[in-house]
Length: 120
Image (cartoon, rainbow, N blue to C red; front, side, top):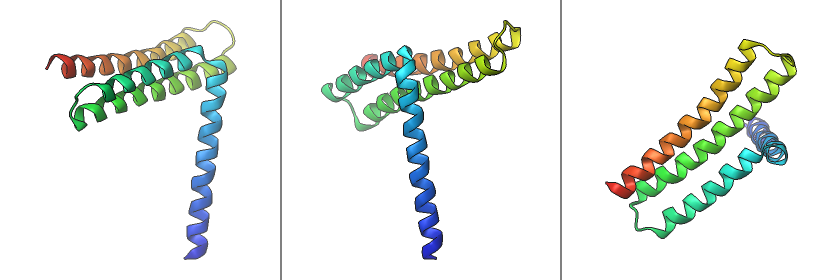
């Protein structure tokens, strides 16, 4: 039992290490990730400044993190597409456009949440 727990702890630690490495790599090369992170920090600061219900605050914070997750997915798609299809290809364009749409939808969701929280 102890060996199984140690193995799971080791797997979890590796997951954290690899995830942090991925975030750092994207941070170093992706200006949009840095921009969305700044927007997220400002949004979180506003969420904690305003008198919001805990559920409203949680929604705002979670959707901000979803934007960052979508941006990381978009970055992964773009890097992979550039690797396998360095030339112009309509399928590569579609993949990249869909990744970008993923980020855009997350941003719209966060904007809708802010709108409902502020106006509702």
